[in-house]
Length: 101
Image (tube, rainbow, N blue to C red):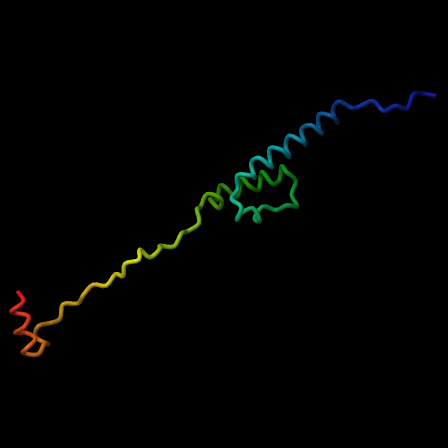
């Protein structure tokens, strides 16, 4: 009877190491994605496919765009006074306007 102890296959060990490195690289790269955009990355893909998907999507500019920030009110109302047409004013208002100048 031969000894039935399985000898570790160096190719299988190397494959497992490479898979672990790829998964770590994928998690590192995808950690840079903003929190509100992480839901766009499909979780069902393998780490290699996730990286390929991310690079294709990044080429379109989806992950580079900053969210649009709406303009805020400065607190001061933007009211510009209207200059009344002197021809439409009554006589006493036209005379009063002339004394102010």
